[in-house]
Length: 236
Length: 301
Image 1 (cartoon, rainbow over the protein chains, first blue to last red):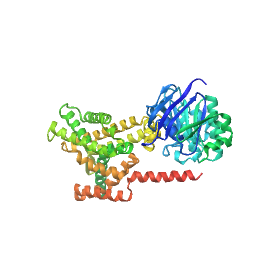
Image 2: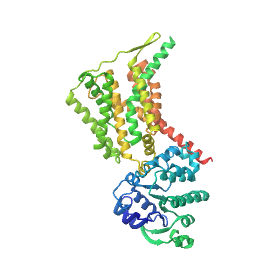
Image 3: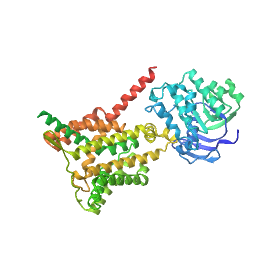
Image 4: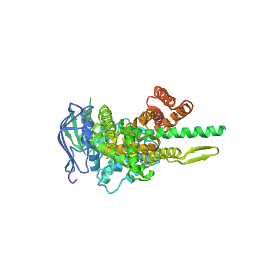
């Protein structure tokens, strides 16, 4: 638990002329799994995109391992070691599974080696379907591929945006187990945007609740395990 | 007798297909990867022809060396142009049209001012290949071989190299590719340079077959655009091959019976018919088919 991986202060960002994020501030430490919860449309995915650099920041600062990245492009941020598993998975449907994984290699240019070993060990199905076009995978397998693609590049921070959406419960469990193991075994820092209360309770060390583009509460592990309390922040 | 006619028709077909492919390749690769229409494509071909004429007649290089000079020279010019101008228009498709059109005007008029209305010709290499009772131009057969080889090299680059897979990833989802650390800007830079180098190659290879004048690019660019529109940018390799093959099958008999002009009209009519039914060309149709197959396979298990 040495040091801060991600530090965000006073972040305003959004699409076009309106800011969706209204002054977000948070801090994520090395080896933590931190969840961001909130109703639909409060800016959780927007926050992830702003961290990745897909959305321009209006004002505020983002620092990654002590270095400012607010003005860097997405590929520069990825090269520093941010792995991104976006909402909707965004795999490359007309590339093979293997080619999709290959695309993760450009993440974290300081890494010593790529992590195909982890990916194929954690998701054996991806190894079995290496030569298949990724678009032909089931939704759950595509989610595994999106996570595997990020893990290949040995990221120092993994951003995972709603991995459980549209996926059958057994596979959600499997994905939860992998994220839990990789955090325990490799001390990988994970920021998880999620609505699935069971997955949150299982994985998160602590959390932030968002509303209307702001962080409105910090949640402890116990609070996150309390389904009724959690539902209050998730309810529409 | 019929064998002679068949061989002759095949030869004409190969000659037309080579011309369509070489004229269109540089344009279709830039369209497919960057989604940018380079209106200066014909002038890049013209530059290639001028570089070959200059290095042949002034520097007395052998023709093969001249072709390499043209490819590298126009490729480097493309690299330079992308850095200083083209990349500023990736978010502005209409602006890109105007900018590349401006480049084409500057190039053709600039060449006219510097070198005058015409250029010393490059002699046509006379190799004759005889097959039974008929004889063919070896150089034109070589053009066909070069066109096919160029497609093969592009295919190999796109499907069997890391940067090629990155390029296809960027074609499918540029934003996600960037989020994985892929330098999409650099891919665009290299693609534009490669498309320019292909235009340079075309200009160099056809320099011995035409008169070298500042406006010669227009003779290539109309055919190039017809081929690209019919082929579609969804998959540059599939698009260029199918479109050049189909169009040359249609226009070759017309041209050999009624002359080049009627052949060109045939090309245009064929293009109109194709885009009426396949608005995104052969490769757009092919990609839709593939996507439907993918969707069907994803539902099945």
